[in-house]
Image (tube, rainbow, N blue to C red; front, side, top):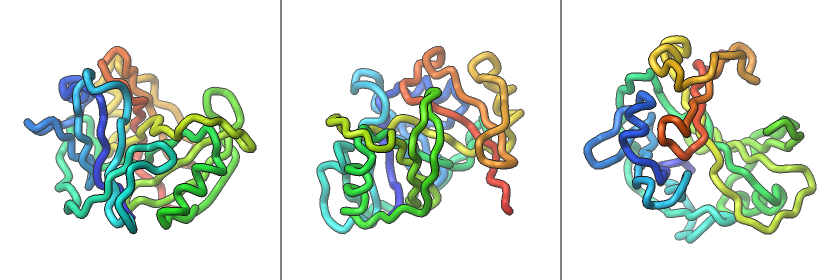
Amino acid sequence: MTLSELLVADPPEAWRAAGFTVDDDGTSRVGTVRIRLLGDAAGKGVMGWALRGLPEERADVDGVPTTATDEPAAEPAGHPNGTTHIDHVVLLAPDLTRTVAALGGIGLEPRRERDGELGGGPVRQVFYRLGEVILEVVGAQGATGEGPATIWGLTHTVADIDAAAALLGEHAAPVKDAVQPGRRITTLRTRELGMSVRTALISPHVKD
């Protein structure tokens, strides 16, 4: 199963200001994934996704609006900020056990798990593969919140993290070491850019 598309309630000009190439139809082709920018009138944040290889038509996966698609993978675009592909998508789960079960129900099995931190608090992270994209499910161990799971943020791999940060200037936080050994990361000041999706840029994966 692979991630084909994300629906994002942001205006195209905000993503262009962040160094992404956006086609005339409002789509940014990030690696093989199409990010369809619906404009801020559509809501806020990531409104849903399309998955290739779903075993059946779905209306949602634990509250995340979900569409099955057989659309071919996107042709990657070149981006001024040097983005090559989506490194990972963060899915925030108010009930981690429930979300993991929902993902299992569509045939996804965890690749690994670990304890981590989000917003200064301890969380459990469960990782999956959706083609070239890592799906990172995050939730408090044992929490049983009733709300839906939500796509909380995106991290994009860039060819040169220092060049990307220099391009964005004051719209990017200082580059720092990432959790992943050997990698470095910067977060975008999305509110100033007019983006509603938490967004980070990270240096390429370092092979062991």
